[in-house]
Image (cartoon, rainbow, N blue to C red):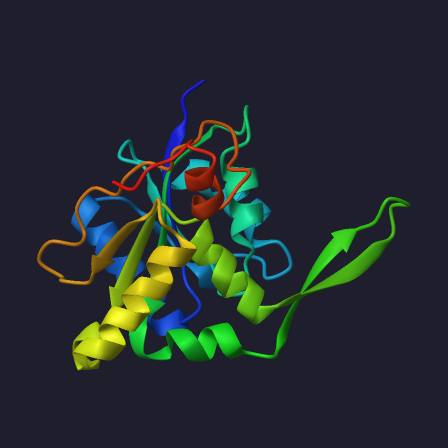
Length: 206
């Protein structure tokens, strides 16, 4: 089976995430599947249906909305037999607003089917989604960081490093940051965030 290489782009801040995904698509000559084209109820499955049709041989960049669960994205795109090969998960972080994203008290709703086959709505805190996107990313790209003071930037980078010690952490510099993204260190699915992998001795920072 020919598999489609996929780089997933996540992030709580929509405009920054979308701009980065578009630049990454252009720089790597990969078609872009924008978040606006995905079904909001189940963006991961929606992407899995679209992606094989977009591949032109170099793979695809898939942008996911802020409400998407990174666990669903990884589980769906890395599933054996899906015809997809997840090469990396980039979490785009708007550095000045990171703490605000982690303090949000709102919830995202998504549709699912319970054990009896009945539809229901699952609510997940936006703050939890933002934390998990950091924890499970293979690359974290800090954007808009130049306006921060040196102490604030240091605190922001330290926080990200504690949440995702095995991820590549990069300060966004357009001339150099759009080149190859590190593959995620899994084959079928990722069952633990970076800091748990590090504690278990099964991952390392690159």
